[in-house]
Length: 557
Ligand code: ADP
Ligand code: MG
Image 1: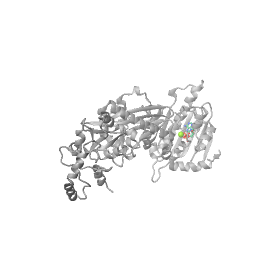
Image 2: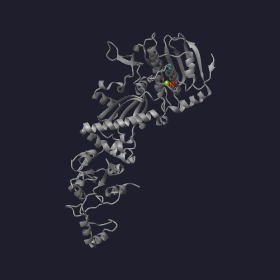
Image 3: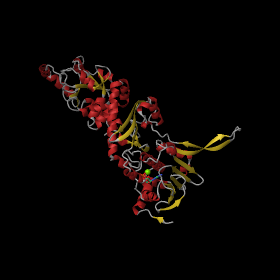
Image 4: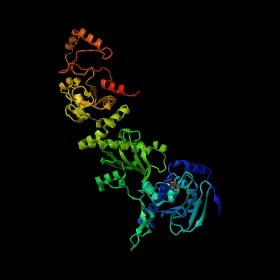
C-alpha cells in the first residue's frame, strides 16, 4: 500500500489549521456533522432531477457513536459517499471543497442548504484525533474505500467492504496530554451537549446510542443498563417556521430557553428575507435593562448561524451601538461556516444583513410607539438613554434613524411626548423648540427661567437626564426648528425691547455694584424680560448652557 504525501502547501496549512483556526476543539464535531448533512443534501438534490432516485426522508440520518474502550468516536452518515478519486481530491487536498464544486456543477442556485465551501472543516478532526479513518461508498458504486491519515504525514487509501452507501468517519481520540484532556470527546453527555449547541438545527436526525439505567424487573433496588437510540437535535429551528404557526408563547419560551434575559421580552421581531440576501432572524426587545448593561462586561451582539449551524455566539457587527439591547439570532445561508471573526467584519453579506436588521428594528420601534404607546414607554424608560447616547456619540449621523424615537416630558401634556407631537402643536409665532434642564420634573417646574415661555403658552420639554441636552445639541434641529434652552440669553420671543433697554440704563449704577460683588461668578447683570413672579434668574449666552457646564465640570479629566 503506497503512502501518498499531502501537497506541500497542504502540509503547512494543516498544521496552521490544527493549531490556530479554531479557538475551541469541540467544533470538530460541528464540522464533521455539517459534512455529513451536506452529503445527505447532495442525495436530496440528485433525487430532484434523477427519476431513478427517490428520497425517502426516513432513510437518512447521522449517527454518533463513542466507544471508550477502543477510544474511538464514529460519525456515520447515509449520505452520497465518496469514490476513490473523491477521497483523494477532497480529503487529500486541503482547501478544496467538493461541496462547492457540487453546487457549481449541478448549477444549484438555491443549493443554500449545503454548508461546505471552504474545504478546511474536515481537518478539524485532527485537533482531537491522532488517526482519522474514512470509510466511504459512493452512491451508484459497489466499491468502498478506506482513507486513513495520521495528520501532516500524508494518507493511505485501500479498498474495503461497506454494505451501504455513505460514509463512516472514525476518530482515534488522542491520549490525554499534560494540560489537555481529550477524554471528554468520548463522553456521551458531553457529546450530546456539543451537538445541541452547534448542530441542533441540522435538518436530518443526529442519533446517538445512549446508555441508560432502569430498575430490573421484579426487583426493588437492582438496576441494569440498557442502550437506547435517541435523536439529539431538534431539527427545525423556530426561525425557519412559519410566523403564522407560532404563538407569542412560543417566542417567549424560546427567549427563556436561550437565556436572553430573566424578564419577558417586550416584543419579538421575526424576519424572513429571501431576496438578494437571504436570512432569517428572531430578535427581541427586552423589557428590562440587563443587570450588566452598563458594565464593561456587557457585550452586544446576536447569535450568528450559517444555515442552521452556530458560528458565533455574539456577533457584534450585526447591531448598532444604540440598539445594543436587542437580543436574538440571525441565520443566513449566504455565510460560510468556517469564516473567522476578522473575515466577518469585511463580509459584504453580513454588512447588508446588519443594515437590514437595524432598519427593521427602527421600524418596529416606531410601530410600537404608534400602536402600543404604553409598551413603548416601558421600553423607553429602560433604553431611551441608549437611543440618546446614539444620537450624541455619532455626532448626529444617526439623526434620521433615531430622532423620531426620542421622547421627553412635556410641560403641557404632563407626560412623555415625541418631537413630532411637539411640533404638531406649535403655535405659528413660536420659532423654537423650548427645553429646560434640571434634576427632576418637580425642580424644573419651579425654574424662574420657564416663566416667560410658559406664559406665552409655549410647550417646554423637560430634560432630566445628563445626556439629554448633549444629544439635542447634536440633532441641532427637528423639522427645521432649532432647540432653545429657556435659560439662553435670547429666547426669540418678541418683547418691548426699547422699554427694557431704557430700564437697563436707568439702573446702570445698581447693576455695576452687583457685578462687582459677583465678580468671577457672572458676566453681566441685566433687566430680564422673562420673569413674572421670580425676582431673578441665571441665563447663558453661548452654546454651552449652565446645566451642560455643570456636567462637564463634574466629569473626570
Ligand atoms: P467543506 O465542507 O467546506 O467543503 P471540508 O474540509 O469540511 O470542506 O470537506 C471537504 C470535502 O470532503 C467536502 O466538500 C466533501 O466533498 C467531502 N466530504 C467530507 N466529508 C464528507 C462526507 N461525510 N460525505 C461525503 N463527502 C464528504
Ligand atoms: Mg465541511
